[in-house]
Length: 142
Image 1 (cartoon, rainbow, N blue to C red):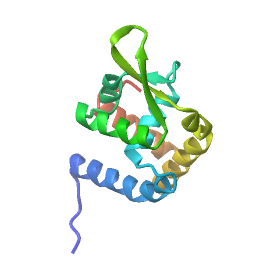
Image 2: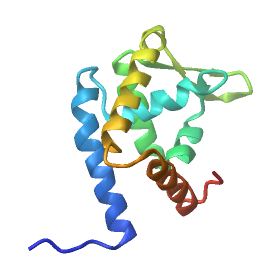
Image 3: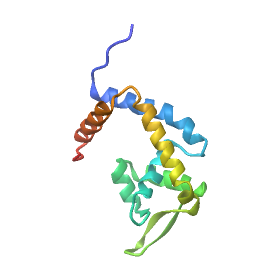
Image 4: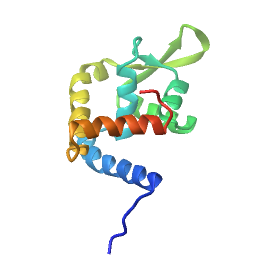
């Protein structure tokens, strides 16, 4: 007998696991994980198409070692490089490579396909309401 789950934390975790179950096979075709895609997606929307490691950490609430691991994996796969930060000689920026640039439209379309598949049981209004509630839950002004 299945128990009805009515705890936010458990439901959010289950939704994350459902996202990974749906997305990982798609991203695997590109040699990426869903977490690596998140890094690329973040870089795609930056005006400079670069970011500091700390920016990634803050955006996704991840630890420094986790962020570095993702960046190193993306570098090995040829999607990102680290370059000098013109505003801070001690720091580096993560930048997209030509490979990542050339795949942007394809990867973003894939991201939309996954999002649609994940939320296919929701109406447009329900999807918007879910986004608004999750933003409120984590302290983002929608």
